[in-house]
Length: 350
Image (cartoon, rainbow, N blue to C red; front, side, top):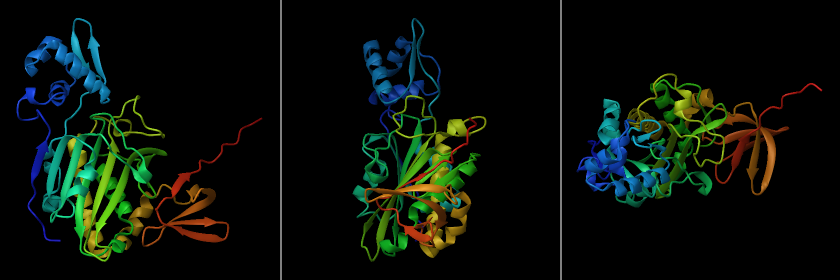
């Protein structure tokens, strides 16, 4: 693919066009460093009434931000929040990959970063990245909803075109997972693994997820929109329906910058996709095995309204999961399949 010059765009109200133009985005910008602000100071900075400030505080809380209010003192967040910034994200992309990442768009609020790229995919001729502080209809695999509190994670999608047909993109979600692993290593996060076909996990808990959507001609050319979500600092009240973890729990010392993590994800993803376009999944087969959270584990496989037990034996050269069930060897494509690792039982003394 021919490299293209990168562009950065921000669609976040109030970030650079005057604080009063974007509520509650502008309010979050003021509170982001975790400092305490009085109601009157916020009202003056925003050019609104104190009643309007109170209303915006409620809106931030509804979006998942924990805003403390101390009587007679003011408001503060329970922890600082770093706003996504396209320039800082671009600065974290390796110089060799900036042209391959292409345009970087950051939105304050959008239905879904992947949906935004899908809408423009048919006419797009260059790679493009899309991020958002708030997704009103973020989605994961098998129609699940992807939710995270404002500032609590990274939601990024990446659009890339491929000359070949859709069949050549087998294993793409696994490639994206490997790219995320490399990006997390870049910011000194360890103890992370990949759960087939699209989860990033740590100690059996979900840290992130990947959703790949394909379009175009089945015989080529085609395009892929790769959506990646990573938990950064989620908080105890997050509406997540499974065991989860976040970077705040995994990272020793100061939490890595959201913009740095997002930039490294895009950089590593663009790098991996260049190799994938030229050599396919076999170029990553051994690498995936190093990070395979299911390898050699007993798993429960649910498909076609049936659940059965087996042992995960890695993946094939096209990214299918290999499972043995007794003497039977099965290859499972992602599709509408759910795979769950079965934890070994611990014997107890009577």
